[in-house]
Image 1 (cartoon, protein in one colour):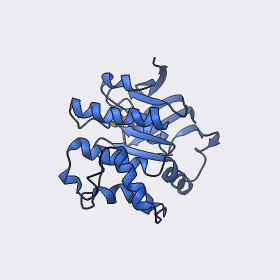
Image 2 (cartoon, rainbow, N blue to C red):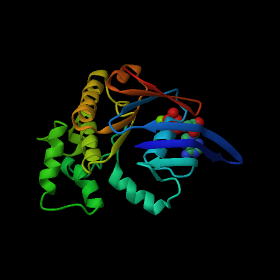
Image 3 (cartoon, helix red, strand yellow):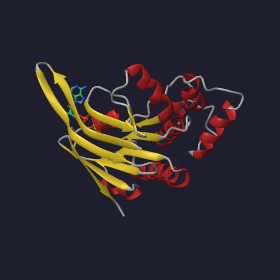
Amino acid sequence: MIELKHINKYYKVGDFQLHVLKDVNLKIESGDFVGIMGPSGSGKSTLVNVLGFLDSDYEGEYLFEGNLISNLIDKKISAIRNKTVGFVFQEFNLIETQTIFENVQLPLLYNGQTSRKTKEIVQTTLEKVGLAEKGNQLPSQLSGGQRQRAAIARALINHPKFIIADEPTGALDTATSRNIMTILQELNQKEGVTLVMVTHDPNLLEYCTHKVEVIDGRVRKEERL
Ligand code: ADP
Ligand code: MG
């Protein structure tokens, strides 16, 4: 599904070029649950921003389903991104003034995909993450784990081809992290959702099908049994 070939990424810091991704070659297949590990500052977030079409300022080739993405103009890339990728972040990034239902519905509004069925689709997605009863509440009325489940529902609502989760359990306690991981694993195993997750916690790799290690901008993918 995804192939990165010889990706190099630099950040300009004053007169200095910080070399953050170094000749990255990586393949991700449909159905993978990839866990990305590595020291702080090694380039994990930069890598997933490239994978999720959030960052197109790099050298090298990005092939998505065999199509060259790295040559497209940004406007075209954002159109593809909205239909293809769902995002989950450590800090949930929910809109505090909108209800859980409205937050989850947002990508459909944004893509002009609302219809008579929207309410039903949002409700079914909330059920998938165990928030069937929480649609009318505000994010501030929910626990951290519930907020992250709402963010997962929002990421799922468009039926994305893959989901990027950058430290999705980083702000949660161990038990809540496990609950979130179980939900992600179920989505992967039962619905075939492809997941790319950054984590600091080696214990969470047991939920993944593959491990990717990022060390000083260099990337290595390993199969897990
Ligand atoms: P990780 O997610 O593994 O902690 P990042 O991908 O966030 O690492 O960062 C990799 C390196 O790039 C770090 O040295 C970081 O300071 C630097 N960096 C990240 N974002 C920027 C930016 N927007 N401008 C300049 N340097 C950045
Ligand atoms: Mg990071």
